[in-house]
Image (cartoon, rainbow, N blue to C red; front, side, top):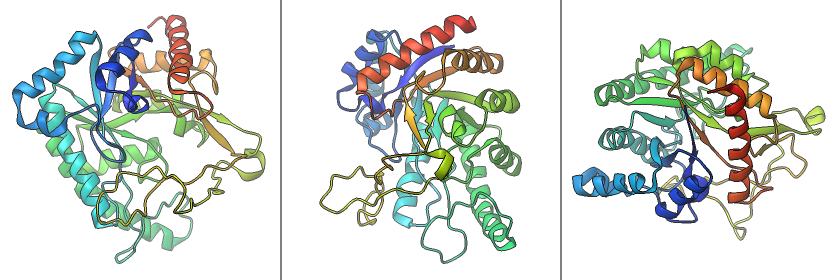
Length: 337
């Protein structure tokens, strides 16, 4: 098993510095972004695709730092109803398969995407409880779009020897173990599986350890990211929609949607008394949980790669990584993996 970090949190520095930071934290590998919602400052995409020398020079940076490259990340919505968003994110996802092949990588983290709920719709529709027959009609329409798309992606991935590891993320068609299994079953996929990220499972009240053991060999990659459920959840529930739209004069974090989207897609302001928050590993669930999680992953694959993803706004970049790395080191020792 290898403990590393997803370097999106280190995009404030160049790759050499990011790798040095990972090494200083005692981490063994890194996962770098290859497109989708965010940029690619740690991966010269065009150069790697077009030049063997550039690729070898890039890989040499990891060897020099003593840190492994252990995956690519291209989270986005490749099924978005907006054609500009769809073209950007789908193009990045397809491209990442060839990138992974050229870099000797076998794991690409991604999301399933979320299409419209009916022909002619202008926005994605996330349906989570289709007790009304019309909602089930919409859900069936979404799956009719997703299945052929993912069947073709699986073919491309299999040809390249790459596994597409879906983060089960709400606001996507695949957001829990049953929807992941449905996608694999309906596509007949052999190279599509799960990236096991506990954070989004926690706030859905899913036990990540039970989910890991349930999915078994479908778990191909993992993230270490924690969530704290707050007292406000008792009133607002975990499906808390009290987000604020930012004004045009306020700084915005875009979602990598490319030209043609008119700046429509960006991150909204989180509720001040939120029902739940992302926190550093160990600050939502203790070492005992993380030890059992690592143990479950080891049962699935002793060579599993587990990368810290840091989104705790209460802690700085390095401070949050230090907390996470320390928690995981303790958990790993306790788990004996």
